[in-house]
Image (cartoon, rainbow, N blue to C red):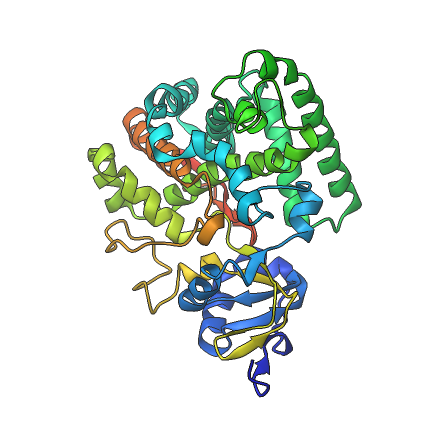
Length: 400
């Protein structure tokens, strides 16, 4: 390592977390131009903001390893995001069995689409809804919950688990009340799993939960709940959040371009994949992915010390003007280019395919069943968040 390199952590950008969560994109754009790597104290992370540098770091799993403190605190240890090597492969294998493309293709229509249709039909006579909280989140909770194996857990409970753990993740354990609520939910999940152990032992099925307890184990043996609680909690947050919020943000962008929305309404199946792809680029549901350097490393001509908490700013990489023309604009007809909203390397989101397929199904069924779908001119959408960002409130109208 060259001794003359400047330390990246000595470059400090002061920005209020409230301002970042309201809209991080002006700060991203300035940092990409002026200081693409800098310490942002309010987030307790070294930000990496350009597409090239995020890719360079993200592809270097050995040095830019998984963070430990936050994921261990919020989800529990071990969890699939904090593991590496053979331990990571062992933890990921049962999830891959249910979330790889071939497996997902087997339940797109019978599971994902059927769920979307059921929930959309329940509100189609109303003519108005806050479509994220009233429709997309419930669809995601139920559809992904079924894949995980929570088919007997009601929507209200799944929603409460998701929100408590999601707030815990965003808060990073700073607020005692939020931490206590997150820990209480993990205790509930432990109790729920305890009640399933006999079924997993006697008659294992193809749910992700059952596979987590049994995959690769000798006949008649199960993994312990404490081995799996961290990964179960993580799948609840990531599995429920990405499809709902990714779809909500895609719809916000699309409905803000009425001529493009009209094209989708005329032929939803042919354009639904583009709607979701551009939405994920435009507004990444997880706006950053956290890493921890395992040794001193050079990145962008600067020294990053070992043990530095890193934020690879996916939302910034996705709006890098050297890669995407007019990056702040949602454009359904943008030339296709790979976005990085699902992360990098061995920790690429295990649910990326189901998230895209569920979003695609929702777009198709919404435009097929809610004619004249459009933004509500009297109620403004609310887009918020940094670590977790989306159109949290998306009021829409349609011709009932």
